Image 1: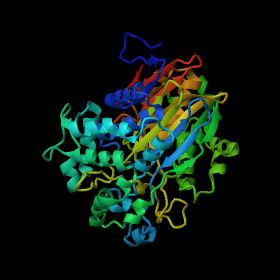
Image 2 (image 1 turned 90 degrees about the horizontal axis):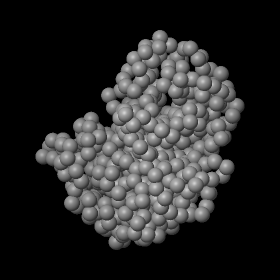
Image 3 (image 1 turned 60 degrees about the vertical axis):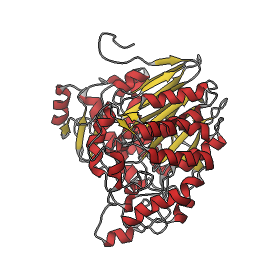
Image 4 (image 1 turned 90 degrees about the vertical axis):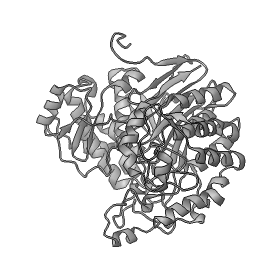
Length: 525
């Protein structure tokens, strides 16, 4: 139980349903959908689409999603890959010929076809109860009427607005300036897009005027995207990958997501007595950082479009983790095996919902970097993701950019299960940090017996590209000790990630937790 004399927040307990996410309006909409007879999938989609209006720097209909869920009365966890593909005409060799070593972030080269809308439409039809028009109605309302800009959103907006280019500046700035906290942000163009999707389904987005608007914006920037690329977009049903840690099963979305990295990291941590360490001390932070370096190096070598990846079994094998754990010096930091391939991106939303029938949904939805590629369609203001930056340009690499491929993705929803029963959908936002965040959250729960809210509140650290980012929640003494071990330590300007979770107790009571690093909350009824 938390200390009620110090700042903090209580978990939310309810019986009929809970939503936990990063903006209160989205959580409220999800609960309203449940009260109207919708199920957890209806509620999660409704809240997620609204988050594209509440947090446009984080996500939107020009992005991708991944979803884990179980149906009411079942404990089988299903996965849906809602990530888009590179246009058919994309070629790594063309970028290499321009002297590039990576896919440039704020160009049409980085824009993959948005996959989230196809996934949402598919899930609404196959798993939802109340229909797409009812699910999208709240987001249409708020896109038209506007949403007050929340404090964390305003902070991120200021950090990321430099990405916006061309017509995107007209849509996402107020007369050329940043919106202020409490100022109303409206997106009437997106309201019209959502109305058409509600009326006509996914084809309204992937063909006709809306698709043409996106293609025109990309073509103007030198993109090779075609109407056929958009029309061919289709979400893919798949099965989770899983690992075991101290009595709990961690289920992750399979590649092209990076969830296997979290499982590998926990497999490495099994070789150390983490529970005997100070949870907020230098020893644990150091071991976790070293495990992350090794797990992320494996990620960068192996994770790719599943049709092109062949080393998943090797990555998840116990002997792989044992061999990597043996490389860790408990007293000394190693040089990064290979720099983490991207900076810590803050730009993702996560929503989880559990309903009265105990359907659980774990959904993550993103445009990748802050404001994605910075390219928006002119008529409807659809901001396009830069997920193609997740590809590499190394010839022959499994994750090499090529037409029709899905890139390695940072966003990963998760679930915990015990004895075959789903007990906790959860997610940790923060781009590259996410596998580290999953491993730390599970370790906080299992090694230190923390409640979900306390496990989120706890300070975070992340070894990223040769710098060990250590939040202010750690003491100066810990930072000094880490520096003596050879880490290059700095306090990050932005809090590391954000998280949401719902614990499904064996009594049937639901417990929702929401990260104070974001504007959001858990709500139940």
